[in-house]
Image 1 (cartoon, one colour):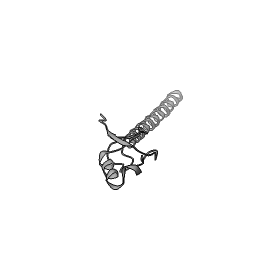
Image 2 (image 1 turned 135 degrees about the vertical axis):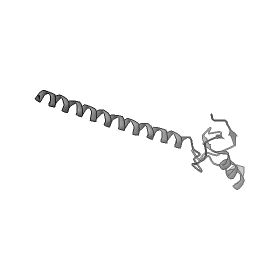
Image 3 (image 1 turned 120 degrees about the horizontal axis):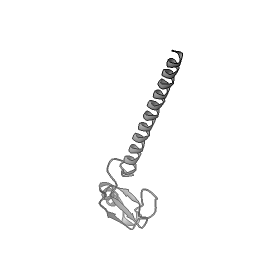
Image 4 (image 1 turned 90 degrees about the vertical axis):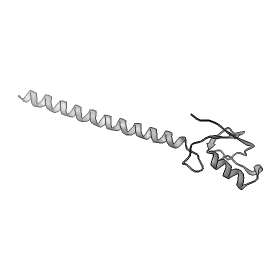
Length: 97
């Protein structure tokens, strides 16, 4: 009888450990997904997806509405990449699946 209680206690501890481990894994997965979503967002507005590359630095930095706003507010010679702050000669809009 004492052996059954010990075995039961050990099994309960294992089950609790597995449940904790699964919970931690799920939290880590959710955190990775959140980070991936944030990484794909425009560095200017943080809401739209990145779809514009700055040249010559090649940073995939911003959404097209933010690029349009940037282009409208200052002369082309003063444009700076919002990621690396290098001067920008041009922009390319790309399709990101």
